[in-house]
Image (tube, rainbow, N blue to C red; front, side, top):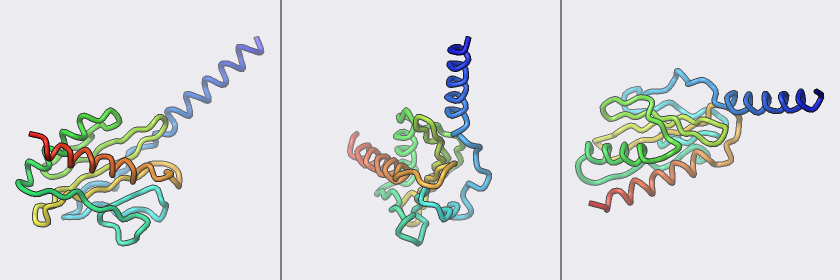
Length: 151
């Protein structure tokens, strides 16, 4: 009996850990004009609109037709196993990016005038993400560039 209770306790803690680390969807996201929300002070966020080196990441650049570039980004995101598109508006995508236990929020905003796609990715929970948001956005950048050269 003691052994079964112990197993049940461990399984309960494991399930709480799995589902409790997702956090709630933030309500402060979305494009405000030509900008995305600022990063918090914690190091678990990157944004092409950030002024400080800790949070700053380059936007996605493209040449050619803006709508085609944005469609290419959407295709890249839809092919990723860790990404779910949550909101889509003309020139704006909001996604959830999942790791084993955590959910991060990503945003992409088309800036036609600059021929770039602004981006932001932030953890919902915790303080540090050990560089996961930055590395994931750089991976998406590489996939976006490769998709650009393929017919």
